[in-house]
Length: 278
Length: 324
Image 1 (cartoon, one colour):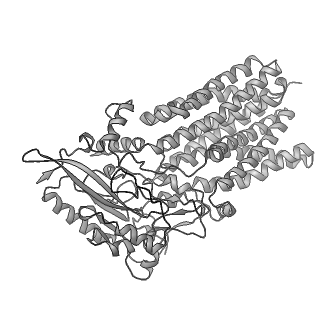
Image 2 (tube, rainbow over the protein chains, first blue to last red; image 1 turned 180 degrees about the vertical axis):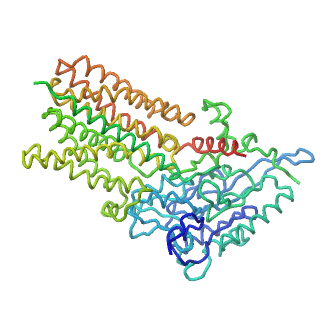
Image 3 (cartoon, rainbow over the protein chains, first blue to last red; image 1 turned 30 degrees about the horizontal axis):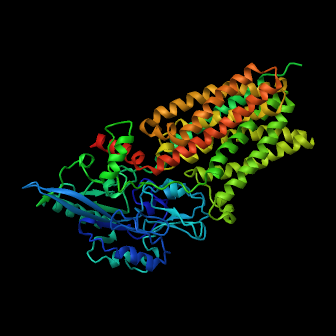
């Protein structure tokens, strides 16, 4: 039996004929309290080295963003709001724990020239440390700025969705540590159902900005293995509003490369025909 | 209960205010206000060094197009030009290989590039292309200089010419197959810009090193490549729209403007100075320098477009708003 290449199931598409259901994260930012337990648990479990101890001065966020040594990042947004009734000014806090999206159509995986990045049986995307040669292609290819090259070892690193823990039937360290269940782990199908109910509840309660982000299998990355419930537009959290996997345009790019190369060959032939007069 | 002032984030005053006010003053398009996370970039700048990778865009182009020129010159009987172009191709591709390995985070693992073949990765395709092209260009140059195995040398010259057309153009796919807005959005035009810029470099090197009377194919190549490059660059900038800004401002803007002056001046010198060795050589040097400046300009413009979140957010927001 050959793998079903049209399926939206990335593990099946990668050639796993029998595999567990696709696992992922649903990060419900409406109940994130900004405790950063996810950041700490991730670092502890995965032995991720220190990523800087500077204070940014911009907010309570001194982690700044995802990177080679930062696989969970809690964003803090301080937002002016007005009370509907009396027009009084106030502030609301948005907090959100960001992570690798484990895209269905994954640019880092597509462009990796060594095969160091691979699709696991859980549908996640993982770097093999013993293969990566630090070419850095994945870094510029990721539409979310997730993966990066670590100075110390020259290799690319990112969230593995705790591949080792999944293999042992455990949930990822960040989800385990999250005290409010803002980070939920499970089969992606179940998470999507749960998220749809939750966003409907929030909207009914008057949270008009509540929206799901990367839950849609028809979006530019085929949906995220990690998706989010946000209370405002994605760019407010530092997320791209309409990410598209870069390799979606690669067939068109190769076509134009082919035409340009053909133009060069035609030029070479024309030069060869202009025989030298003696 | 409190409510956010306005459902539309782009018009909420004060949100991320410092950043937005400053940005709004710099924007050429007034309606392109946007929100970002404290002005932080959304995507990561590619982890590529300018001297290694922009240098490779130039040298790889020089090598590939020189092989095309060498094949044409050899067939039409311009042996001296053909020899110079073959040696240039070998030299340029050798330095390129060193630069590419040097840019790796783990240079000793460079051979992992040939562990798999992936059409979805222009870097994988390029690695295999270079693995085939490098030895071919080497054989062509060595056979020509040493006059050993001339028939095989001619075959290698033609083979290197064919593969060289790919070496000179695939680098466009290499940079455009990223999330970098200044490169990605130009994926249709970049291959033509790179092909013509590479041809300018190869023509320039021929004019610089060979007497004008013996460099006619190089002059013809410059005559074809310069207008093509100017047109390709215009089309690229038009396609990029707002994202063309990094190509027109700051350091990349200066590099690209200087490149354009040298490109046009180089062609004028090559045509008008076709009986004067010094003018012709100067024109060649000018074309060669122009190609290098173009590649560094394109490289740095892309990097600048990755650093500023507006180039990622504004076009995506517009696309999303149109759809909704």
